[in-house]
Length: 267
Image 1 (tube, helix red, strand yellow):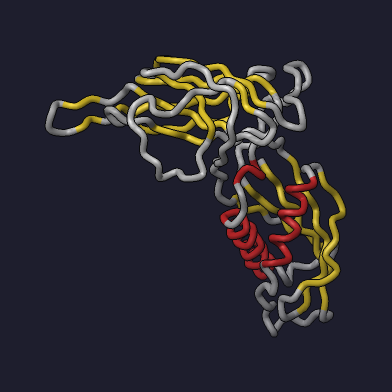
Image 2: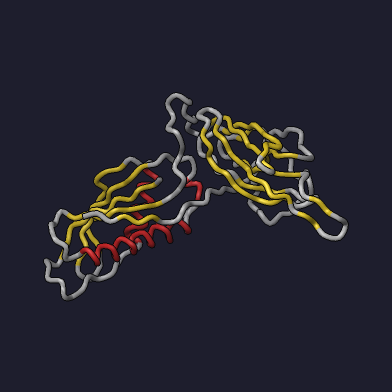
């Protein structure tokens, strides 16, 4: 029997800073700079130096400047949408909404895990106001357009729980168990660097385990996977850390241990 629940999406962010050759900064529009560790730094207008190329250990951030207004008494924000596009595949990696303040720069870290060429699109009132192309060097190259999937995973978790037993004794309990497992994965997600989930294709990992009547688990084994090793390890660790899980009702007469398979999906 199978049960499926959908957890929350993942917000993709990144930080970091190194030195590199700089380009000319804009006073209006969007460009990229080195992401800062101190994200509380508030610089005016085009105070951030622009960069078009980023080395393997450097992290880019988008900078939006020159928007918003002031009537001399109060500041008026300018709403915008910022899109990040992988040029090789045409994949829209992220779309973030924000608001620019008059005389200030809005800085948005970008999570990029693959080498390649990228473009930022600044959209205001449903029109493209500015674009910015830049390149990033990483260990792996971005896939070519003819071989890439349509899009990367959006960052949603879901899971199923299955048993080889032909019984309905545990239907209600398994729903409770599955929710507890997803809660553990959601909590683990909040504690790790969100770059782990950036530019990752959809996939799944199946984890086989035993659970006893007290909710303790044992013999945890990965039996199938289509996700990268980092995400496989993340889901396995999250699952193990979440134990012990709820005990099953004492009224259920069953052997002291059940064998189950939990399959995590990353979409």
